[in-house]
Length: 397
Image 1 (spheres, rainbow, N blue to C red):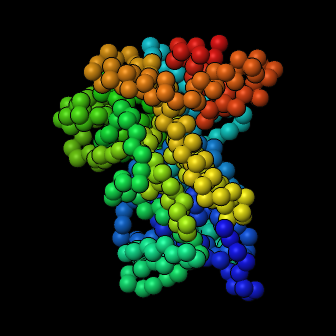
Image 2 (cartoon, rainbow, N blue to C red):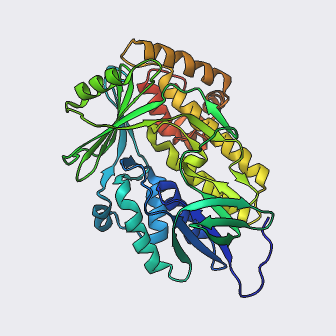
Image 3 (cartoon, helix red, strand yellow):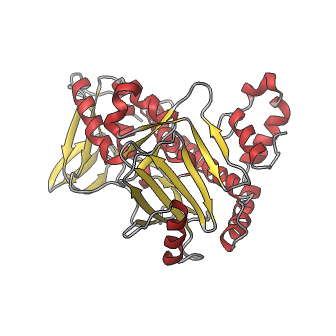
C-alpha cells in the first residue's frame, strides 16, 4: 500500500512502452492522479510498435477527451482516423449483422503509427509539470520492496511504481494459456481510403478477417489456426476475399493468455505483457482500461494486491467466454476449422459461469422496463440481446 511522502517530494510512476496500452496508461494516470505524482513514459524510439489500423471502443474516446480535451471533429485527422458506429459481422450467418454502439456512444479507428507523436505533443503542453518522457532501451527492471529500479541504456533510475507495457512476454510460466481457436494473423494494407464507418468481422472458411478503415488506407487482418490451415492456403483465401494481390504480408503468430498476477509488489503489467486475446470487438482496450482503473484504486488504498489480481482474472475470463459466445454457433462455413472452433468454445462456455449468470439475470430483470438492471456481460444488455437474436442463440428471449 501507499505511504506518505516527505513534504515537497513526489511519487514517481514510470510507464514502459508507448503502444496503445502505454499511451492509455499514461493518459489515465495523468488525468486521475493528483499533483503528488510525476508520470514518466519510458520508450525506445528504435523499437517499432504493431503498425496496423486499430479499432477502438467508447472507452478509448473517453480517455482522450478526459485527458487532452480530444476534439473528434478537429483532431481525428491527426490520427488518420475514421468514425466507428458499429461492428459488422459478415458471413457468420446468412445475413450481415450490425452490432451498434448505443446510447450516443461513438468510437474511432486510428493509425497506431500516428498515436504516440500526437498524444505526447498534447500532454507535454497540458501537463508541463507532471509529465516526463525518457527515451531509451529498458535493459532491466528490478522489483524491490519499496521501489523499482530500471536500467535504461546503462543508466540507473528509480521509481515508486512501474507499469510494464513492453509487449508480448518471452516466457509464459506465470500465465494461463487459453485454448481459443486462432493463433496466426496475416496483415495487409491497401493504399486506398476506407469509406465505411464500422469495424468489419468477416468469417472465412479458416477463421475471420478484420476490416479497419483509415483515411489514408484500409487495414485487413486474416486470422486463422496454423495447425489446421497452412500459410500458403491462408494467403490464397485472404487475397480472394479482399480482392488484392498480397506480396509480403505482415505476419504475427500469437497465443491467447492472461497473467496470473498482473500486479506484483511495485510492478503492474498492462497491454500484451498482461494479457492477449484475438481482436474481437476491441476487447483489449476494455481490459487495459480495467487494469488501470483497478491500479488507481490500489494506489488510493481502496483495494488490495490480491483483490486487484483476482478482479483482472475475472475480467479476462469474461472476455474469453464472450469470444467463445461468438464462435460456438459457428458460421456459414462447415469446415474443419469451424467444426473444431464450435467444439472448443462450446466446452469453454459450458464450464464458465458468465453465460449462465447472465441468463439467470435476464430471467429476473429481462423485461424492457427493467433492462437497465441487468448486469450484462462486457456489452450493454441491449446490445447483448441483439447479438443473441442475430446469432440465433435465443438465450435471452
